[in-house]
Image 1 (cartoon, rainbow, N blue to C red):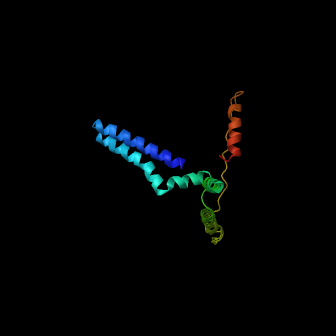
Image 2 (cartoon, helix red, strand yellow; image 1 turned 135 degrees about the horizontal axis):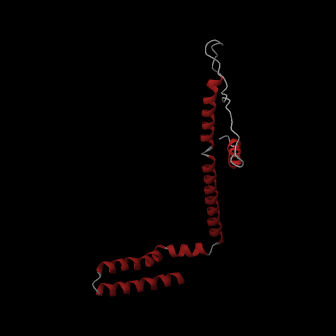
Image 3 (cartoon, rainbow, N blue to C red; image 1 turned 180 degrees about the vertical axis):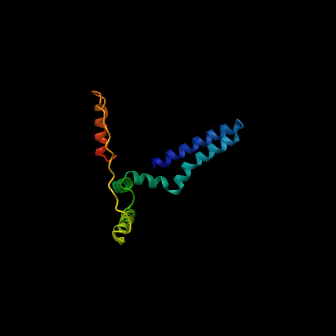
Length: 153
């Protein structure tokens, strides 16, 4: 009852402001204010205000909103985790299968015998004469080289 009275008062005030605005020959603005002032009365007549008041003071409605919020939070969390992992489970399985297919044909290729092509020789660095390093010059990069070797770079 109180909400309907407040909405009626707001609509009456908006109607008065629209009349004053139209008197000043600002008809477009007056029409816009009139449209805004008709919204509260329309809400009262459709029963939306009563529904909103009933919903605002209903514990079961708040529980429902809480559950909807929790469901939305879970959904968004799973999407973030899925993006970090690199796609859905189906996409990851397809990528793993493609990776196995890329490795498997080379591993199961028939050999043509020992004389068909030369055996691969391991790459060795040619031995060169090394000059003695100045004190402290090689130590600067030895830590960096160790880190790069550790990471396979």
